[in-house]
Length: 269
Picture 1: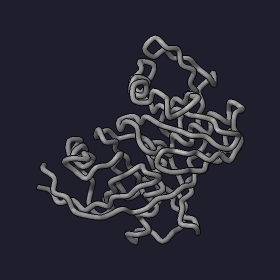
Picture 2: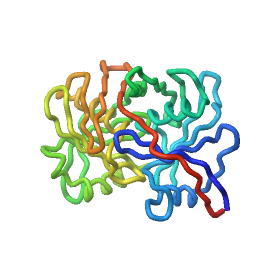
Picture 3: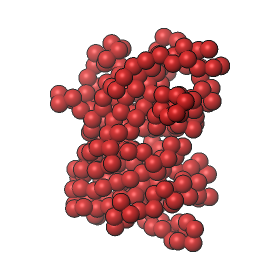
Picture 4: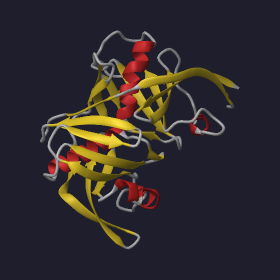
């Protein structure tokens, strides 16, 4: 049995198991990660976040993200906010802003005076044409496809409460158009500075909030001329604020992050 210390954290209801691998190398198998994420037989979470020493000289840490299915992914915005609070609480850094390397590129989460965290998510990468059509179960959907370090397909809906997230979400995630799978966003525009959002996340299913999904939705709405920055994003688990000046400018996301509890778990393997 392997004894593993962990912290449970959440950002707007998007919950994480956070592991400190700055002193010992990270060596969990996919089956062990799935057990950690299991809400009945493990700790339970949407993603597992791993803090490692940096591999590049311009970064303070390496940030790895594993979905509940055990697969490693490029980026997680809500997790980035929890990441900076975790390294502060553990005494791993005294910097209010840290530079973190991810599979999706370098990001810079910053601890603000009000206790929330802002994250420079870098510039978005929008596919061309801006609005594209995909067919799902015989229905033609109009989506904006873009990357916030990880891939997103965002569609407009009249009412997120009635959106077919549970049925259409997994079909979009595994659509043949996206061989590496994709996150499916369902966005309702409330006014030019506010949206409601639900996201079916790749490898995790629908979550209470998705940081990169919030960024992707706000960017898609601004690019389509439907929204103006900053945008308040209302997820089921909480509210995030996303700012983007367009073009090659970075997307900034601000929102809460907090520790829930800490513990030690025994894992087979």
